[in-house]
Image 1 (cartoon, rainbow, N blue to C red):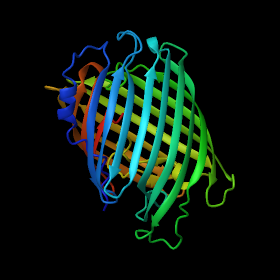
Image 2 (spheres, helix red, strand yellow):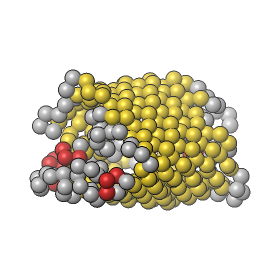
Image 3 (cartoon, rainbow, N blue to C red):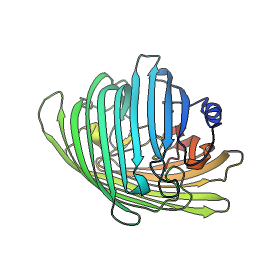
Image 4 (cartoon, helix red, strand yellow):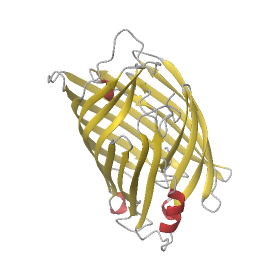
Length: 352
């Protein structure tokens, strides 16, 4: 059984403490340099680093923190993954711009739609770029547009774990997606909320072309909703989330709505569940921190619908380390159990 292990930032707490020794005032930019160390059955050892710079474009009392992150890893099997992402809030939170460029040559898994036990392993290689531009239209209201383009080539398909009579058609494709976004956001902190509400609705359309045929034959529409709420409970915070995504039309397997990974339904391998529609409800309690260390417990239930259907329970607990207190930036270490097993996750920032 493969465990959904995110790359382990094994020394990040120690390094973060050293980096954070500079003056901790909310008006100054802060820099964290963290090693990335991990392991997975399909990659062997994983080695790399991530650099995160947190800064503000305006007064701290009126402007949320922006982030610039550079991430790069390589594996014992000579696979690579790297990205650069800028998430910039304009002065006074009047605008938000998020730009990301990514390159990967990395092994991924594909399961039968609905999350059945049939499993195929493949390598995806290619670039992906995305842009999200938001403008404030009210006190806590934002509207905007998004764009994403990617060109992935699939190779090294391994069907050892596939038991169905019909093998999946795993071919690479090029895809372009456009979307419109409507957001309401009253969170008190963007990186580690303790109060407020976040609500996002997204409507998008995708056109894709399979590399195997070269035909522009796939068009699809996508609707997604994400509702989050944060409330005080004792000395800690109770975070709740309800999310859903549905696709209509014809799309390649890697563009189907998916659940699983370190931010949605922890306890399921990334892409373990792909279907025409996927939804989840999650709840997490985050304790107050003591000497920058806190704890969390979480549980949730997801579901897939379309060609397959199954319920997807998850439960887990974790530790939080407050890397940059002024901006509420944390390093989290979570262990979660799902229907098909369990896994360890280490990442920057809260899951939601």
